[in-house]
Amino acid sequence: MKNHIFDTQSRFLRYVRVDTQSDPNAETFPSTEKQKNLAQLLVEELLEMGISDAHLDEFGYVYATIPSNSPKKVATICFCSHLDTSPDCSGANVKPIVHHDWDGKDIILPEDPTQIIKLTEHPDLEAQIGNDIITASGTTLLGADNKAGIAEIMSAAAFLQKNPQIKHGAIKILFTPDEEVGRGTEKVDLEKLGADFAYTMDGESLGTLEDETFSADGVSLIIKGVSTHPGFAFGKLENALKIAGDILATLPKHSLSPETTQGMEGFIHPTQISGIQEEVKLDFIIRDFSVSGLIEKETLLQNICQEVLKRYPHSQVDFRVTEQYRNMKEILNQYPEVSNYALEAIEKCGIKAEKRSIRGGTDGSRLSFMGLPCPNIFAGEHAFHSKLEWVSVEDMETASQVIINLVQIWEQKA
Ligand SMILES: [Zn+2]
Image (cartoon, rainbow, N blue to C red; front, side, top):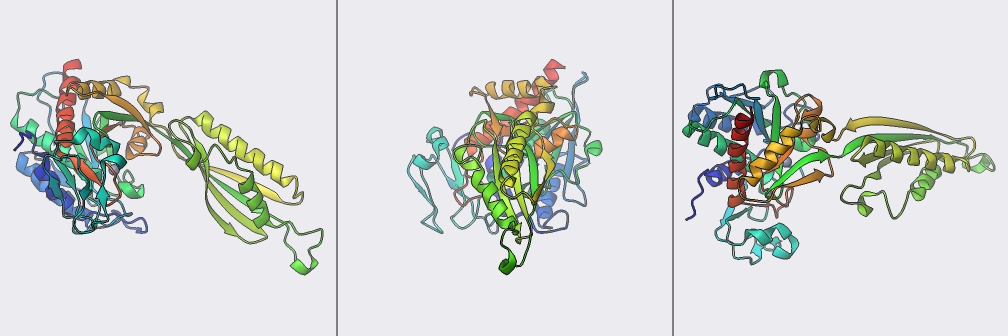
C-alpha cells in the first residue's frame, strides 16, 4: 500500500459514483437537478472539515471559504472545478476500478472488452507504470473530468484544516455546474465569491498549466439569391444553395481548417447550413489565438464571398460577426504572477512545469474576462468524454500538493 497523504483516491471513488451529467438541451439552470446531489455531498464534507460557510445555492454552485491564517495582507485565491460530466457519454452507474501498480499491459474494461486502454494510444501512460490507474468499467465515462479536480481541491482543503501551521491567505472554493454545456459561469456570483485570482483544476497532463485559450467569433452568412420558377429561370435564377456551395468549395483545402491545423494555428470552420434557392444561412466558427488572427480569417472569408458573388451579380451576402469568447492570455498578461506562482508550485513538487495552450475555450477564459483571472492547472484527467477515460492516483496526489504549495507561495510573496 502506497502512502497517499491526501487521500484523493477515496474521495474520487465516492464522487464519480454520483451521476452529474449535464444536458445541452435543457433550459433550466442547472441543466440537470442531479448535479446538486454531488454539490450537496461536497457541502456536507466541507462542513465536516470545519469549513463553516460552505453552502449550495439555488443554481447548484458550491461556495466555501478557508479563512486566512496569515498576519499579512494576502490576495484571496480561489480553486474551481466543475460538478457536471459530459453529455457525450453516459455518466450513470459509474463503477470505478483501481488498477494497482499498473504494469503497462493493455487495460481491458470488463463490462465491454472491446474497450481497451493501450499504452500505444495514450502516450501519457508511459510515465504511469507502477502507478495506481483508475478507469471506468467499459459502459460509462469515468468522470475524472472534472471530479479529479474536485477530489484534489477537497483533499487539499482537508489537509489545510488539519495542518494550521501551513500559512496561507483566504482561500475560496468554487464548484460549478454545467461547464460541459458551456454555461458554467452563467449564474456565478463573483461578488459573493470575493476572490482576487482563481485557478481551475481541470487540465490533463501532470505538470501542465494552461494560460491561453482560443479567441472565438461566430460568422453567419445570409446569402440572398435571385429566385424564379425553374421553368422560367433562363438567364435569371441565381440559386443561393449554389452560391453557398461555391463559397464552401473556395475555402482553403490544405490549411485553415480544424482538420489541417494544430498547435497555435487557427481556422475557419463551417458548422451549419440551412435554406432554399432564395436564401441560405451558412454558419462558421472562426478560431485563432489572437484577435488580429481572427480578423485576418474573417477578411479572407469576406474576400471569398466577394469573389464568388462576381459570378452572381444580382445576389448578395450579409456578413454577420458575433464575438464568442477571447483568449484569457489578454487578461493573464496583466497579472504575470498568477501563472508564475503556479509554475513555481508545480516545480516545487519535483516535476517539470509546462505551459500549454488550449484549442478551445474554458470557464477560466470566461471568468478571466468577468474580472477573475483564472488559468487552468492539471488535474490528471485523460481521454475525457469517453469510456476510456483514466486518471492516476499519483497525479491527483501531486495536484493536491500543487494547491498546498501555491497557497504558501502567495502567502510568502505577499
Ligand atoms: Zn472539464
